[in-house]
Length: 207
Image 1 (cartoon, rainbow, N blue to C red):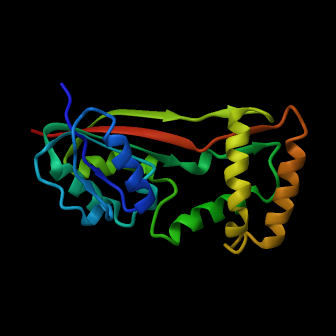
Image 2 (image 1 turned 90 degrees about the vertical axis):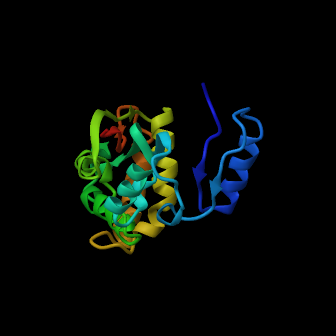
Image 3 (image 1 turned 180 degrees about the vertical axis):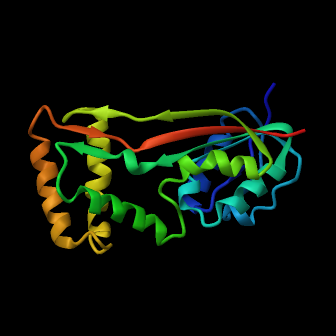
């Protein structure tokens, strides 16, 4: 059995995309709330499954958001969240600027009230929200230059590096040095990038 899917999406562009997809999925029309998660008027005791991917690392007060989602589940319903625990991000050989770069990555999310390593905290937060954790699955990817993993991490982090540069203890000088090291590493076939870990956590609402 299947039915319409409800969604929460604050972005106008992504909301428009969801509306286009829903017209083709043959599940029927669901409700789309174009607002922040904490403001969505979710009905209580309604959903069999709620899924969120790469949302909670941006959210201030994740406990309040989890309690809101747990209240919207039917007894026995499941909440599945996929999010990061990012400290596994490494480059081998490792640049001397790397630890400060990781701190800047964390600080970037801190400025938005989020937590770059929320994935590692989710199981304990699930329990406090009245959910029994039924599965925890971490995924970490590794790649050499030219691989899909290397291209993904390089495109993202070199693209965002200028925004990290002012975040202490990182500096523009360290960002420039890291960029040079990164580009040089890409020319050496034995270089390795290890991705941030994505943690999948599933919890069941207690009956």
